[in-house]
Length: 273
Image (cartoon, rainbow, N blue to C red):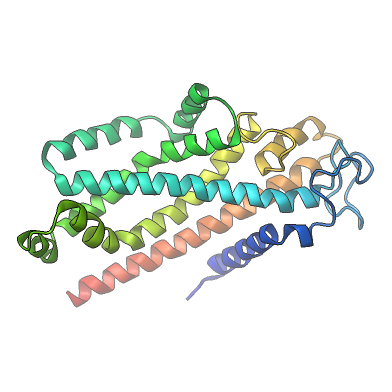
């Protein structure tokens, strides 16, 4: 059963996704319509979250910004989880020196904080939203690869894998037709739990001016644009920051619930065994 936290997370995240999909219908103004209202006007019935320096409706920009913040987070995690899965499963199954060398590579990369590694990659390939998405995804590979390697090693020792080897199945077939399907639940859990971190990392890099560039309504870029007016137009930062916080919290609550469900499932499986 869902607890109150995960229920809130599911409801809020569902509303954000619906808002992102139907943004043209829900948003009262175009996200980039300059002078759609008075500049730096406070929240009102006409402009729920006020307007920014260019007279753009903050509420409309937040709704459209959900498209950017959610999609780039998901794409970044998908890149990291797919790459980490291929690497982790491969070195775990092949074993021997390949596993030793692969594990050392993971350890070396894991020694760098993921955010600093993302900064380093952006410094090399240049600024831009998609460069940041690539950098954050690349920095997450060691984390995913380590967990998936550990899970793959456990599955590798199961009798049915030995039976596949005796039947003459090839490595690729065994790795991706027999090992991978058995660790899909773990992959889903760690991907969900890391999605919030990816959204925050991308927003942070955009806040520093390295990711989404004006006038894109990505939440981190909106925070960056509003910081100059925080003293006399705080709504330009408060609302994007609030939506970023609530979205990440919702994702983390769902991730925790999935993790608990997976632990319970594994406990039941061990009991039956």
